[in-house]
Amino acid sequence: MTDQDDIDEDLARSESLGEVFQIISQLQKLEFLNLSENNLSQRIDDVTPFMGEQCKESLASIKKLILNNTAMPLEPFYSMLTCLAGVQDLYLSLNGYESIPESPEQYPNVRSLSINRHVITQWDEIGKLGFVFPGLIELRMSECPLENIIPTDIPHQLPNLKVLNLNDTLLDTWEAIDALKCFPGLTDVSLMGIPPLKQYSDQHEKRQLLVARLPNIINLNKTKVTDEEREDAERFLIRHHMDDENPPSRYLELVETHGVLARLAEVNLKAKESAKISFIFDDQPLCKKEINLMQSTTSLKKYLSEIIGIPPPGFDGYFTAKLGSPLVLKK
Image 1 (spheres, one colour):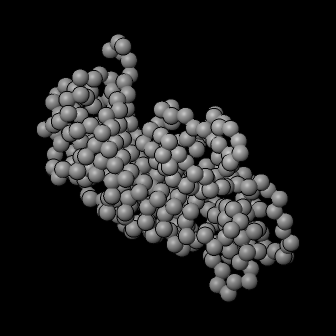
Image 2 (image 1 turned 120 degrees about the vertical axis):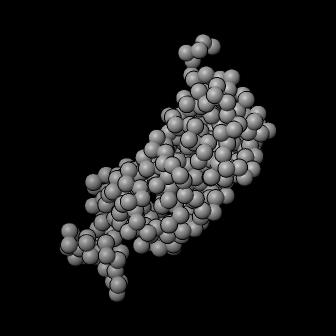
Image 3 (image 1 turned 45 degrees about the vertical axis):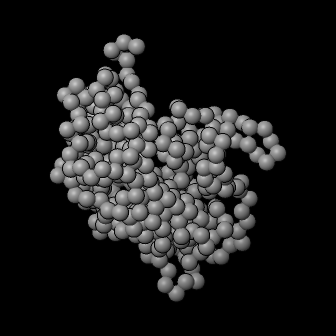
């Protein structure tokens, strides 16, 4: 390997910060650093004493940083990130964060953040991420107890956000979903497994209700929304709420566009769009999830990479039906 080569370093399950940074100091042009499952829970205000000048030079080239399941508090993480000015893609899942502390600095280079399985319930805490990472474009926070979204604060908090994953959160009202319209740049959202949808058994119906309420969304659950699908969904929502005493505000907006529609006998002949799938990793049960069957294999592998903490090039995926042989998942 020459000094011109880019390096990826996986230091998962290392022993200490001192050990980690000693190894890093020997590397050049490091672009990917995985510190997952290291115990970084020590309450220190500043991690820079662990970093020599040679280490800081190596850190400057890092673009992707994975700190999943490290229990690292955000205060020392902020000081660490100050030395990582090149980081654009950040993974902070499984760290049990209960709140987002204020940061003395902003980190505009961070474009993508995964913070799945936190324990934050209120949007006012999540909104603070926008002040810490003002350039944030993609935010993934699935499988967490988030209960609400406050629409009045959104334009100031996350003005550049385009991609948002809220799968398996506890957003418990349609008003929380309607609040997604307030993100000025949001075009791609994932909303599988949320409480307002659980009363509906038909997957196509779930998707129609979401599409109709989110006029700004281009991709829903990793699948493109076509103009034809949007019009069909908006008409469906009108018929769905036409007998309600207090229909949602979106219903009134759509009646202005499409008028009051006659009732139709609707027959759905579309293929199944989602299914419950059990995942196995390293011969051990990993999880059982409702998966969008319309998404690409690339999107599915990216989703799985967020769960296992390994980028898609680092693992292969196989699908096995009950009576079939394993099939490799290709792009």
